Length: 319
Image (tube, rainbow, N blue to C red; front, top):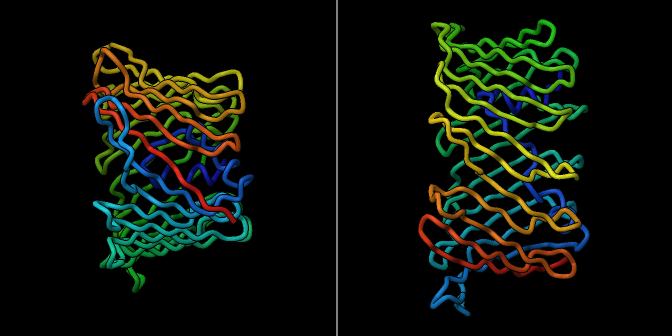
């Protein structure tokens, strides 16, 4: 079984997502090919049907030579509101993440990650501004056996124990006294895709359940239940290049809406996305414009619920 998948899914209560955002792969390729060092986004509000000439800075991002973001700075009213920093090892694994508040640089959150020689995560150190947590991952070969969360003094606060039988993995969730307070049961198909994930409370009642359908490695459908209650079903449609094309969403009332629509150019770059915004008459929309080198020049955004338009424009520096 794919333990990287196990970690990402089980630690996050089995809330699976599409692995890569639409257009993300081509965008990262453009960053590398153009040796982009930084990107600045300027927001231009609309006035009398046109974007204003003068905009305000929304964020600055810096990238390494592999296209990984290493710093994000977000602005509010012209001053720094939030700063995020990232570090990677020589295999592009993220080894550090930090979140700072405002100009004063107050540390809000920090995470350090250690991997073994095979790229498996074996340790995390987390700091939320006041408390430290240490998370250890133990394996037997390729199989994840245990995740333990403790404080800085080694006192165990939370533990997850993994047991495998065929294509089923049962995860016992334990508190600081080793009492079982819940469990996860995950089932996999012959391609190691997770096809069913159920979370139980300490009384063995179902809290949440997800059912997934795949075509090979492509996620085609996801259904969510809370207890025994149906919450939604999402159906994923792909184009001839296996890029996500459309997301249909079925609601408890029985109606199905087109929740997302994605359009790409011939090179696979995302040029338009639409999404349902609780306005049945029209979708919200983002339209992407690129220069001849494949770098994003501007984005036209329309929020249908508020009938609000804004334009994003971009500037770059290069290595």
